[in-house]
Length: 248
Image (cartoon, rainbow, N blue to C red; front, side, top):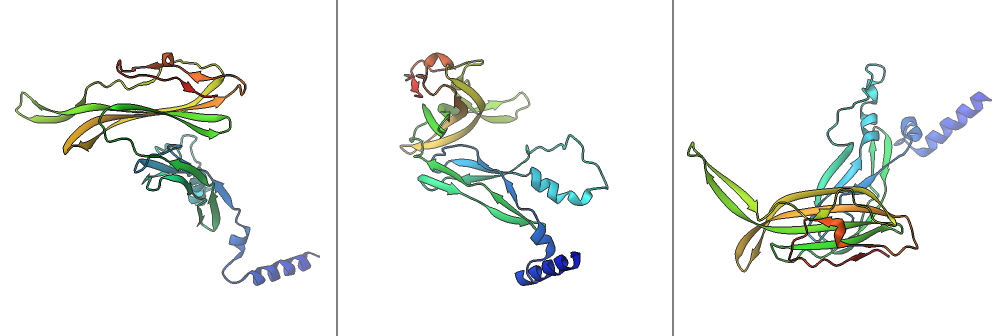
């Protein structure tokens, strides 16, 4: 009986063709997670595409099995992700994936990401922009963008050396208050970042500090009337007119 099964298996392999061997036939397909750093990039905005590489790392180093024992602290600095910077070039609905590739005869497939690219920010060095982006029927994120005018500053030191810096009018960007809570919502991950850039306005190059924050939320009460009000935020400029963000 065992000989019959073995013969049947070998015949099956032969029928598949010379390009596929036993290892590739028995290799278990793996699905790895593909993510993007923003749920709604702007036109020409730079954002990140990331792959979860934990399983890839295990596959690459599997030949070390029996020779060393991997530490509980792997000491990685990439948070288990392979990341690439890309630019949004097409306004409207966009799709990435599913990506498909092989590593050591194991087939890897990613999920597909569908996202929307919207208009670029206006040509100004000052402003605040709020966006509510639904990420599912019960989750969304609030994106806060801010441009603060900045100027170049030259400083001469006692040793006669000169330093050049870019200094904004102020550095405290608009963001949610620490420890805030909103009835009907639970908070998730969030992140903020700042950098310097410039725009050309009427032939003049103007510098600014750019603040970008993303806050993720889950709707816990589908029947509640939920809105996010001004008192949930800090560092709102005096000349900015805040409008309540209505969730449902």
